[in-house]
Structures are given as C-alpha cells and as structure tokens.
Image (tube, rainbow, N blue to C red; front, top):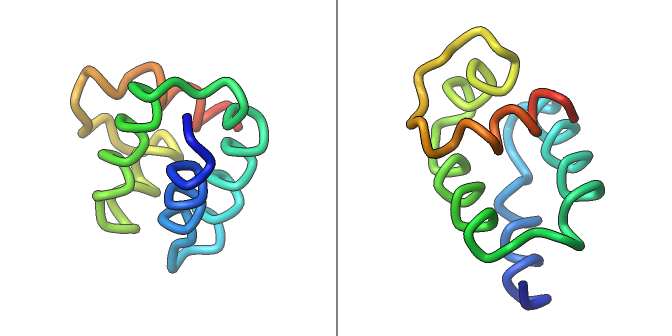
Length: 79
C-alpha cells in the first residue's frame, strides 16, 4: 500500500469516540506495514459506518456488518 493511502486511512481513523481512536490506532500500528490493498479497502468501508455503529461492531455488541468484513472485524476486536 502506498504511503499516501496509508496516511488517508490514518486520517479517517480519527473518530469522535476515544475508544474507536484507540482501537483503530492500535490496529494500524500492528497491521499497516503488511496491509494489502484489499484489506485497506475493507477497512475504508468499515470507516464509512457512523461512530456509534462502528463501535458497536468493534466492541462485539453488534454483528451487523457484511460478511466480507469478518476477518478485519476479528482483528479489530483483538486490537
């Protein structure tokens, strides 16, 4: 993944909820170096969710996400 794409993702990971900021920041710190273009696109799709909905998914309180996001959601939950 190109550096500019990563910087855009980092910027989009800045959210209105501190909890999301922390999880997304940890996720990028652990996975950004090896992130494929496909994984970056899936993360970008998840970042389109409103903060409350995304937090519900990441925290495990909701399973309302597309099945193609299953692997990335699992990694976010582990972050």
